[in-house]
Length: 257
Image (tube, rainbow, N blue to C red; front, side, top):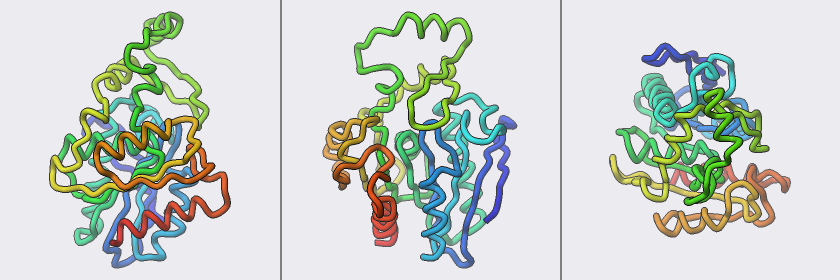
């Protein structure tokens, strides 16, 4: 396994872990969720499973997450897109003949959805696990929800909030990120064919307490994306033995079809 330290144009660093077998014809870019990192359980499982199938895996820390180097960059939608673009460029340079694939978890799926809808990209297969299709609602509340006065006052005072969403290590959410979320409704902006046809596949826990399964179903129907619900599973789809591997099996089948 290789450790990459990629420097962005603004000087910030994107720490990466890359497990790419010799002769790989495909490379999966794993985009982690909110309050997660490149060493999360799903990333580790992908690194354990996919290289044996001849598929490389690259995971990385998004701005504001993971290693201190990545945490130094303020969290923002464009900053996250820039990191993904740089990782994609590096992976393509390492294996020019390899097909680039995307595996996004939760916020990572939301971010990747925005990325492929707004920028030229190399990959044309996108696997969405527990996709945070309604990500803005998690931090802003449903449309029309008035701002919390105490949270608004604290945001004004210190310039960021650091809520505990209960899914990982709390991260600093700067003022500008809240505005980014207001302007990036995936239901309105998702355009998987904007830069060439991108095939998508979704999996979701039927009892997900973080991202409402009904919202995932509505999103999948709107964009005609095949979706599989895992009965009795929560946000991480890891409550039942074997379910995490089933998710990887489905991703592999989708990627290699």
